[in-house]
Image (tube, rainbow over all chains, first blue to last red; front, side):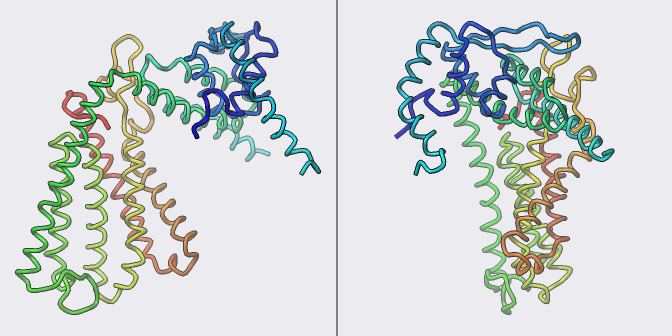
Length: 106
Length: 300
């Protein structure tokens, strides 16, 4: 059975992180560090979320001179609402998956 | 410590080269996400981290180009795909339409059977004739493919021609005595030729290179167009492709059957196949780019 869109553990971890501060802008590098996702996984997820209208993007001026402008992201209103729903739906299975990694839980 | 610093700088250079190469693989209008990834690579603490980050650009470019193709008007795309597919099938079939009848006619004429081996009366008794048929057929296939603007078929026939040429040269040199080793070498040669063609094809120029103040150009079409290292040093690019292909084929042969088959393989033949394939595919890519610049070849 094909997986529903935006329900992969990787996407959910990105959504979870973005939901922690939905009004602030996030950098891709920081998202990668905090979620543990590699750039090749993270960016296709961000691209897809932006295409679906869940993610707002903006080019920000660099903090240091000589550096290129940076792309930043935050959830749209619709995206935040949908993310909360997805995370709530996935909560039981995510909890089971987490418990499976706790020593002695099997 | 000094070595560590050197390797770090090397990784940094590789990361930047990879990002610049990926940049040319994406249509200018679709580069936002790759630019985003590239900008963030500046946050990496060292060269290795930057290289790991830059490698993520490969699946991203794959995704970007896949989405672009999906969003293109489907009718035009489908039609173009069909035309391209038919041209490729016709070019492959055209080559076989020459090789197969010629082979059967030759076996009939020389009264030999089609088995290639140590048994008397096989086609190895007339190596020049059968080598000419297979190599000539491959070359003809390439010409047909280029005429029909079918690049995949041209690469297909490049692999066949390389495989048959190197195999024939080796057989004519060693003769029947070395035939058992020929069997073991065949798969490695074919692998090396395929890797060589594929790598050289990947390294070929793309149309998504633009000047700072002008429309899109093919690399090398205009003196003002920025050219990559690989397009400026074509021979070096082909040699790199050939060397990597040889290393890959050699590694796979040794890994698969350890020394049992690995020792029985003629590595010179494998090296020859890889190098020849890379150079041939590079020439096809160059010819294809020229036709493409004139708007007469379909890009695969």
